[in-house]
Image 1 (tube, rainbow over the protein chains, first blue to last red):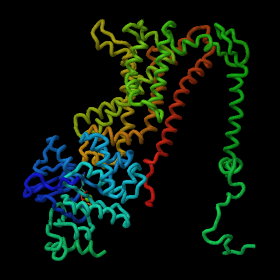
Image 2 (image 1 turned 30 degrees about the horizontal axis):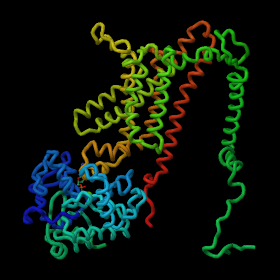
Image 3 (image 1 turned 135 degrees about the vertical axis):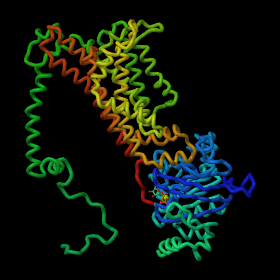
Image 4 (image 1 turned 90 degrees about the vertical axis):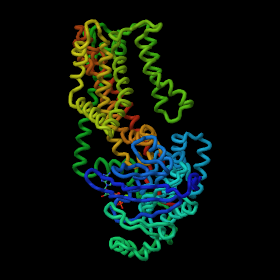
Amino acid sequence: MSSSVSDTEPGRPIIEIVGMHKWFGAFHVLKDIHLTVARGERIVICGPSGSGKSTLIRCINRLEVHQRGRITVDGIELTDDLKNIDEIRREVGIVFQQFNLFPHLSILDNCLLAMTHVRKMARPQAEETAMALLERVRIPEQAHKYPGQLSGGQQQRAAIARALCMSPRIMLFDEPTSALDPEMIREVLDVMVGLAEEGMTMLVVTHEMGFARTVANRMIFMDEGEIIEEAPPQTFFENPQNERTRAFLSQILSH
Amino acid sequence: MMSAGQRAYPPGQHPDLPPPAGTVGPLAWARANLLSTPFNIALTLAALGFLLWAIPPLVDWAILSADFAVHDSSRACTGAGACWAVVSNQPEQYLWGFYPADSLWRPALVALYLLGVVYVTLARRVPFRRKLLWGVAAFPFLAAWLLHGGLGLDIVSTRQWGGFLLTLVVGVTGIIASLPFGILLALGRRSELPLIRALSTGFIETIRGIPLIIFLFFASVMLPLFFPEGVSFDKLVRVLIVVVMFSGAYMAEVIRGGLQAVPRGQFEAASALGLGYWQAMGLIVLPQALRIAIPGIVNNFIALFKDTSLVAIIGLFDLLGTAQLILRNENWIAAPEEAYVFVALLFWIPCFLMSRYSLSLERRLDAAPRAVKRAPAE
Ligand SMILES: Nc1ncnc2c1ncn2[C@@H]1O[C@H](COP(=O)(O)OP(=O)(O)OP(=O)(O)O)[C@@H](O)[C@H]1O
Ligand SMILES: [Mg+2]
């Protein structure tokens, strides 16, 4: 299912953000963002609360609309053109902090929904795909239960499977483990590490620094709507350049 | 003898014991619920006293000393109790007004059809449901054709429709049409398009601020003035349009409440998967919103059903209008209580059924596994 090994030139970036700004009303939430992501790259974004991390990754699949600058995903520029948005949504999967599973549908139906209604796949074929992915996140036995019957970790893994059903080329994760009890964080991170090993392009907002060290190619630190620092994990953790990054890291690594 | 701190059973061996005597059973229930405090005892006694005072005379009047015989005037009644001849002499008037007797099979068929529709939409497991839903969708059209005629059936003018039949036509039309109309209005009010939002909000707030009866007068008296001479359209149709618009506005607000209770993330997750606006709404948001709104929706249905009696004021002979018509006859002028009690009963039955259904539906949805908030991890 990971079709992320490119069928276009490997050199071309899969995400290109140039001079992007966003406002919520008068509030300037993202300021002059420049970010280029190569195919198969894994980027971890961190920063204090309210710094605009969620807003940034939500702009990439147009859950939020930017007002200035340019965002291009896999060669498609994000504009008001609905056709482009539809295409982007098929390319990009997202996993939310609060899982956002559909509580009135079984786990299997959660996974089938987009395949049958957006991709118009036949049900047996869709079911096969869904079961394979539930297998992969290690909850096939939960397929016929409802989200409310699962533990938080299981729900988040189901949400990952649901996103993967659309065979996205890019996966966005917005603090996927911060609503979880500590003993469930591991099982979700394991699934994400597996995805990374298969070469999925990933943008992950997380404060799980252990995960960041092992998985990320690049760390991004944001504060007050700006990208303050951008570096490989090694440099980022051992030799941060910016004062604010140092303050943030010392805070987050102290416990 | 056991001293303090000594255990009756070794750890882990404690069996389930029955609760102490006097804490379960009807006597214990009465003690806990009716007689727990002096104030509670006083309330219980007052309530009992009221029931003893009110019920026996009522039963006596309505049943024991009542005259159920068919007379052609209430003056012919004997006995101290109710004179049900005001009903039993002309039950058809209450049920279908002046609908011609040789066409009565048509409303009867529609009534059966309606029961089928109710069953198919509300029952839990229905064989061939998908196919039967076409029958549900066709109901408004087939029912209108059967009741009114045309295309091979004798035309029965809506002026001949009356009594419970007319009440049901207005109530059921309002109920069927106000739900989709209310959904559209509620979505419109939450739309991101300013024009649609303004129109929906304006419509809802206009309707909610003016009594239904004024719209009914408007429909019956003023609307015809806007049409050129000779063009008129059926008074009942005008009334139906008013009722649907009116109840749609109220429905919209109840549904909007349900929509607000569905977390934003649900719509976002659906959009992120590539579902369009109508798919995300229809498959994800509305099913959850409507479930939350069920008590309010049914409440609106019940209010609407009773509000249909206002059409009596503009001269339609629904259940209430029929009773008033009968009571204008000097033979029956002396028996208004009986007529109104009967009409009240006919209103009460469907309302009570709707209310019970709503309760059982809520209980059923609460019991469904999907309503479980969060199960402990295994
Ligand atoms: N829809 C919105 N309307 C107005 N302001 C918003 C909206 N969403 C977010 N904000 C504001 O934008 C800023 C950035 O929000 P964002 O959610 O991107 O931060 P974050 O870095 O993800 O923070 P956290 O770590 O708390 O999730 C915050 O100040 C937030 O209050
Ligand atoms: Mg966030």
